[in-house]
Length: 83
Image (cartoon, rainbow, N blue to C red):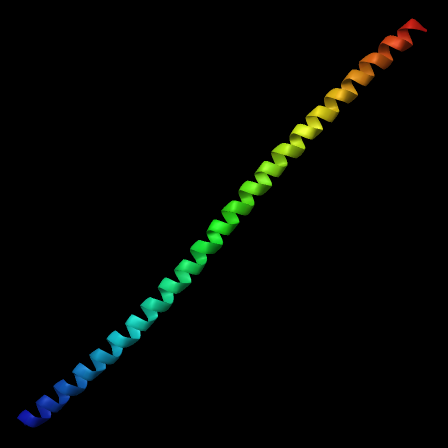
């Protein structure tokens, strides 16, 4: 009876060790996955920043072009009044 209890305890210890090893491997895998996702997040943030900067540059060019067009309209209105 004592031998059976010790054998059962040994099996349970081996099962626990197996589970710990499995969880340790899974933990390592998840940490690697997290690192990859963090790298991807960093890249996406950089891309978003670049797109925002580009949008601001385009907006500035559009504003400048609109200003030039507005001045042209004013000059055309003045020349039409003179005629």
